[in-house]
Image 1 (cartoon, rainbow, N blue to C red):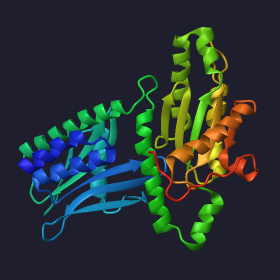
Image 2 (cartoon, rainbow, N blue to C red):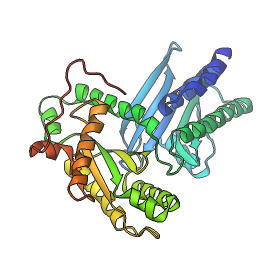
Image 3 (spheres, rainbow, N blue to C red):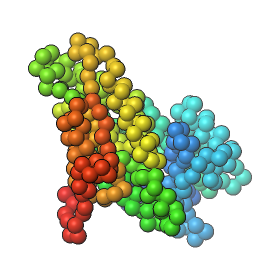
Length: 348
């Protein structure tokens, strides 16, 4: 129990949400010696799921497990009865118990900031008592409270978008995942097809045009209102799993997934147009200039930002209120393609 409590206390040193979730599962497993404990997360936008957690083998050795896939119709290893319990937990936001002949299970909704992050699925060899239920729910409340604090520390106070200091970790994780996918999943014709259609993720640097004039003409209160409204339009224009940042001042950054350049162009153009046609109180018309770079070409965050900045600079120099892709500037010879020299230093 002491070891488990120490592990639970160590959660407060974690600054990464995924590590925090896995630490939560490991702490509960150690405390209760569970047969298995898993976290199921669902993406309603693309109909996919992810299951991460721990399960014990026949010798009682705990092993990590990780499964991803599409809901067709149920996640792998999830029976109809468990799925029914998940649906009930979603509706009630309370734990749901499952009692079988040999296994006893419980589904707990994992809550944070009034949202359901996922579902903790616990399997035990005997029916849990009220003390065990209270222990699990107490640990989940600790998670809920710390998650809220961590979330607040990573958000821009004015807009609610991710802040500048979280960018390094977020883009590093995206690039790491892309590297794993490219090395293990794309070979031969599949790799050529990937290159033909472009990278799966895109980084955009987005700047409000003539924002200084807004502050000078109308004051900082209206300037802040413009920033808030632009951030709200960003949230509506992009998907829930896209990464949206306020870098400071009138500069924003987005990392989105798109199958090809046309898809990325449609997403960013939708946002640009939404800002242009939004009626901003007192200020009137506001526009955005956007520079975009694909993430697959270079795995260096500093150079990626530099490439997107080059595209943004071109958009500013050529009339503003426009969307420019770095790859298109390279293709027509406007800029020279950035290359990473051996031994170059990654500053992030």
